[in-house]
Length: 613
Ligand code: ADP
Ligand code: MG
Image 1 (cartoon, rainbow, N blue to C red):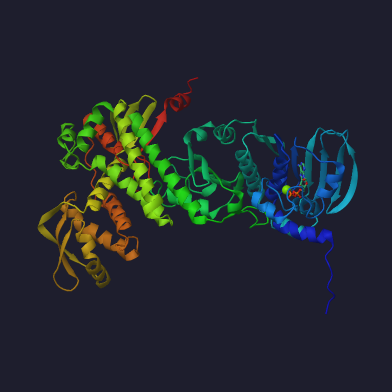
Image 2: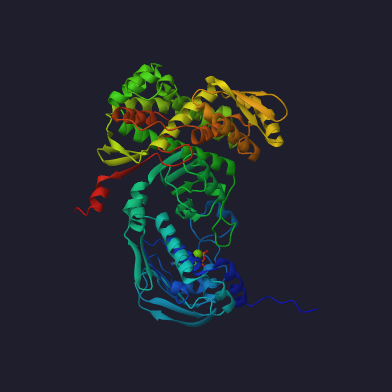
């Protein structure tokens, strides 16, 4: 039997380094955290050859005495906590006391530091975990740490590094995250001698976003702010309909710490579910603040993950806050774009005076018939928000409905302002039959007629479904429907659901049916393919009549995308009426499938394109 022995400190550090610093970006993360913990207001980060050659972080923080600096390189040496209970009131990024010795054990490491009120600084050189030299050095108050030739003492680790492009991307992303977390600290990032970004101290997060991602992005994001029971949410989120193909622009922070939190990511995606197409991710820079005792940060050696003690509470809070904000965005826009003549009409519609709409020559009587245009937003939205709350373990009778009530009040307020504004979209023409062009005070707008039409009808149908009144039409010629056995069985099972939504279907013979009535809004010729689509969705489980509210949403979504014909493009009257109908909906910015309903190009952008100074 081999003899048991304690590992030498240097080996233990190299092993720990495997978890704490698995790649160059992780080294930078630890060093930047140390600088922030030291109270720095200026941090400079430099790397060369994707961090293989050199990683350097320099700060103007409090610095260290020689004694402290020597101690800091020992394993489990920290100035930040003294006992485990301190983790419940943690106010620093670091607490494990592992970073410096780990980094020093796998690189050629140089620490230079000077504390206030000391004459000389200290320089310590460590070569692959062996202390090589300690001497005086001149430097301003603060600390500089260099890790050169990372992982050279453990060549196997070098092989795990990805391409330079990948490692550099991780490095840049890492520094950006801390720059966002601490806008009041000036940050500089240098890659092979080239400045990636240099941001002075910023007053606000939005300013910092502009500094490191560019003004244009900063302007596309909108602030969010919410509080509830000891939780606070703040930051910037993207507009509905403006999604990304990856999650890279979804950044979350908990108590100031950049984290990868499944809870927060899930809640964000859930909040945007109806506002983005499937497979698209929202943009967000989201900060959650909570009591330190509600949080476990010691889940991951690199402190990347956190765990919430009351996960349901956090999740519900974030979902509701995001939903509310998205709804406000739509209402804000509606407020600036609507009013005057249109709002009189909207009011008339709400009062059930459908004729007001037909004066504007909307084709068919469809728009005029529906007095649902207005009320849908008031009735449906709060119920849905309440639903989301209930789904996440909120007592529906308590928080959920209180919230629903608040939303209803708020919706009325919004309508009042909407009516006070002057409508400002001027119709110019239609392109490719699909895009309606408008001039607005701030630029031009291209409206996707199909997306707008789908949104309006989606909410109208949802209103009809919820009210249980779906006007149907008897078909002059019943449409025969022959199905294969599984679809036939599904149809028989779900006939009550289908018939509750405007259809009548008679069975006559095995696998043979006849559609005898279809919803009024539908072209009779579309009834059969639509029923087949519905059966397909039922079969795949995307439509599940068991959850009635969700099933109705899904049915309405299917109806507008598959069976709703787009009327021919009309003149100014029709198009402006379409806009007013759109802005009377709950979510005017996106189609039910999450696509944007319109794109605005502002005058600054136009001037830029035409190179006007
Ligand atoms: P931790 O951050 O978990 O305490 P580290 O190994 O990262 O562990 O750092 C050890 C200690 O060294 C810190 O607790 C801190 O007192 C000191 N230290 C590290 N970096 C700096 C710095 N840039 N400025 C001042 N003190 C520092
Ligand atoms: Mg640290």
